[in-house]
Image 1 (cartoon, rainbow, N blue to C red):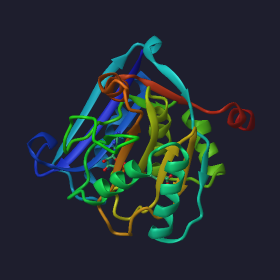
Image 2 (cartoon, rainbow, N blue to C red):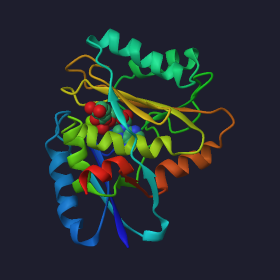
Image 3 (cartoon, rainbow, N blue to C red):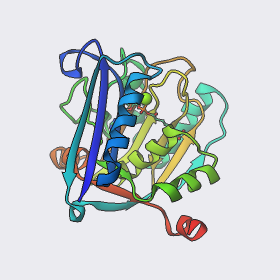
Image 4 (tube, rainbow, N blue to C red):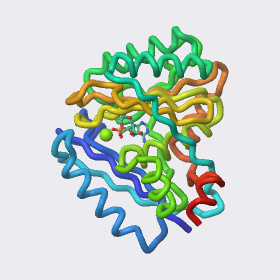
Length: 258
Ligand code: WAQ
Ligand code: MG
């Protein structure tokens, strides 16, 4: 048995009654780590750069180990573009190369850039038309129940790739689960933390980072998942929200850090 630990925090009351999203976190851990991991999430919720949360929800749920799916960690590379404009242009090219229609890419940027504030989850958009496919409105689809399988080796791999810090550590796990979902073509993301400007495109089996997908100081981030037309949205959403996934290191990474 393992345990899914999920946290979401907001300001001005719970998300459901209009509270502003502050932070969230997802882990899968063994019994003996539960209290420590849950306590760290509470601390993080209450000391976030987006503001002070006045609502924190921590949910813990047992998961049968046999129900956990294993998916490989995406290999990462960084596009060394300078400035927001150049980084966004480079991200557009990566998405189009991965098979997302230019029209859908443009709509995705427009949608993300016109958000009044960050959502809690992601928008599912058609990879051809850019039309919104999910019915979750301002909340978005929240990817949940995922973690890295071997946290110790993962930290070494991250340090070796020059990717210290929680943002990349969590985003690479999330993106690895997202790209393993049925009908998924690509993901576009940038952080909602005002001081963190980096973002990424996950597509074609890769995690492609850009140092500046938004200006420093902006509290508005977001995620778009580009979906192949004709995919079952119900199935896809169930996978993203409910399927427990442990992300495993690639063989090459293991060989280096055994
Ligand atoms: N499921 C779906 N959408 C989510 C989730 C989730 N579990 N968590 C966050 N989001 C959405 C939500 O709209 C947030 O406002 C937005 O994504 C940004 O979330 O390689 O830190 O957790 O250096 O602020 C990317 C670059 C960092 C990392 C991403 O996202 C790197 C980041 P944040
Ligand atoms: Mg954030």
